[in-house]
Length: 243
Image 1 (cartoon, rainbow, N blue to C red):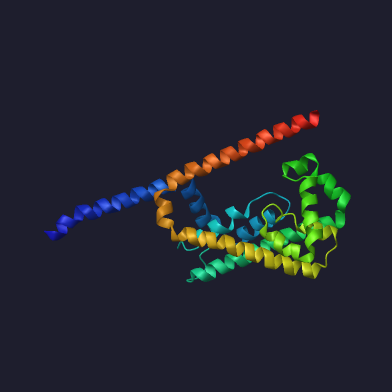
Image 2 (cartoon, rainbow, N blue to C red; image 1 turned 135 degrees about the vertical axis):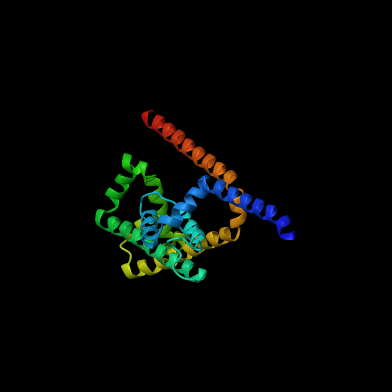
């Protein structure tokens, strides 16, 4: 009799849990998490971080934290060991490898092309589409000249300069070994910070699942507003150029 009394409650609890899971899977957050769990691997992390670290605009904040977040999921391609710490460390190391590859691309292009072509490309239509400009390149170069070789490390921690700091290093023909060493330290430190965000988020997994619908709406609104602001800025800049 006691079991029969508990049975409806158990079924009800399972139903609520299933409904919550189904709701999560149909949200933007749930879709991204599911995609990462099923498709993301170390090669993908490395490739995306290579793109992020080159002159192509792609935020590392949407690579490392989600990868760390889903690494603990049993079905995740990023869950390679029984130790969550080892999974996170492996992701950070491969993310750092990708960041170094992207930085090397910038370094070599700057070394071979030279300052005039780099600045001309930054002010070209393609350069603007990649969110580059001569002012941004000049800002990174001034920072490099002011702080010296250590700027290759510190610059990796500054959002506005992180992807571009390897360009002035190439223009200045910085020693390649020193460039690699400072870049590794900076990229590794930054990826550890991002991994910490993913770790903290995983600790709040139940809360994220519960409010995933609200989070999805907030993310989409932020993305929409960002795109709108970017379009408006482009239109204003185009009008100013015509004048």
